[in-house]
Length: 319
Ligand code: SAM
Ligand code: DTB
Ligand code: SF4
Image 1 (tube, rainbow, N blue to C red):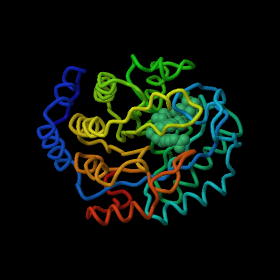
Image 2 (image 1 turned 180 degrees about the vertical axis):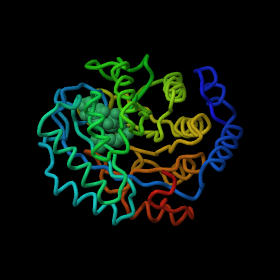
Image 3 (image 1 turned 60 degrees about the vertical axis):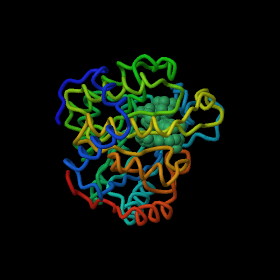
Image 4 (image 1 turned 90 degrees about the horizontal axis):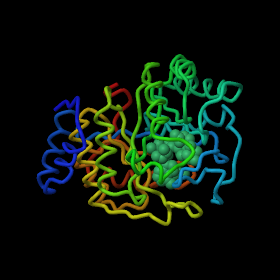
């Protein structure tokens, strides 16, 4: 099914189906578009940690909050390349570099990021960066450096967004997504669940993604990692069945996108991850760390994959 126009009512009809009906449709959609045994693996590295001007209520890296994070300057290129090599050796096919910036500023720091992108691409890995807001000439420079994916999440519904962040708005996020798309970049765009949003908010986010003229190729589904010192940690409400419904609905409305079980896996049982893979999640963050927090360890992932009989997708299996 290729949906070009989909509204919240259509998404709700899918999301709220009796679970066995929802699951059956999601599994069928997954098998029609993907090898259900293959899970894509991306590795994350924080290349510029903390000290961010923004006030995103879930984030450890806002300068406005007292958290476990100590700000660090932009990483040197050789450290980033070493981390990318290690990720490749461990079987990751995509290397994602994250900076705690409101947006990109022209100058030596951006030049260094461009060099990181060139070096990672030269290793034969897919590259992804997440640097906040982008201007068109910056997006073009990233594309020319060999960048494939730009990660920029909508994070939640338009209605709930002002309760999550006050220093930028939903339209700013959509604008950057358009800028990245116009430069020929693939989009990695998803959200966070479990930060006190309602089911309506989750449905509205899914509808927003599905209604894009060209939906994101990659959709990260983060479960809130509660960070001490952030306001949303106190509102953390995680419901595993809502996660499963979110994954299954995304699989049905975005049949050819990779759906990533992103942050929050270290707090999930093997059974819940297995359910999400069954319902169409086919990508994970691999590696012991996310940006500022721990990820599900590599050895437990290997054990989980072996127990389920699934395998890491080889490089360039589809793209
Ligand atoms: N500053 C850039 C931006 O905001 O786009 C890039 C980095 S930001 C940390 C990237 C994404 O990480 C956020 O949009 C959010 O989806 C996710 N994220 C950050 N902190 C998280 C947390 N505590 N739990 C779950 N997801 C989180
Ligand atoms: C995404 O959707 N999730 C990643 C990545 N894109 C940049 C970030 C998760 C961060 C989790 C909390 C932390 O480690 O600080
Ligand atoms: Fe800054 Fe991004 Fe964290 Fe928001 S999510 S505070 S923009 S690093």
